Length: 187
Image (cartoon, rainbow, N blue to C red; front, top):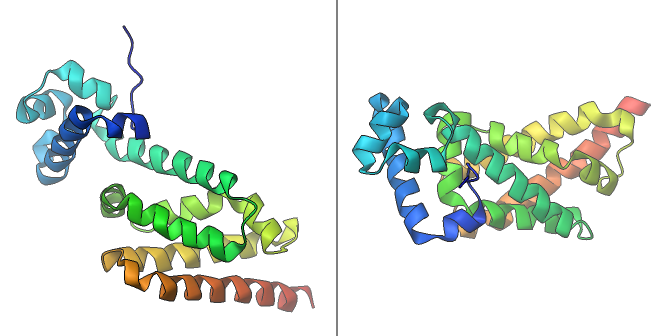
């Protein structure tokens, strides 16, 4: 019998998987000695094969979560590609809130890089919506980095839901200024 290694919505819906995963994560981040699968298994109180069903190696834990988030996010954006830039980013902020625990893990190791990868991952859809020509990719890269920093700072404050409109307004300001920067460069 083979098992698909990594994190998925389906696996996280399973209470037993989620409970074991939470223990693995807690130990992984609290105890530097838990960088080996054998040690993780012993301290979590499960077999090594159980730990291997969750992750290929301890060093892959953060990467597994990063892949899970990016895949989920890109699927969500594709399903909502008909929406405006503002609504896509509103859905993005709620996506982050709904996966807050995962983002806290990623922020500890990746800082704002995870948010940057999310925004870069949807570059072709967003550049069309922002009416940026293909040769303006560098402007989009700067834009993605500014949005990532903004969402990261919001996360450092606890992903407060009542701050969503403020964060969204700032993202929209960055969206507008990206278009202005392009016009200046093209003159």
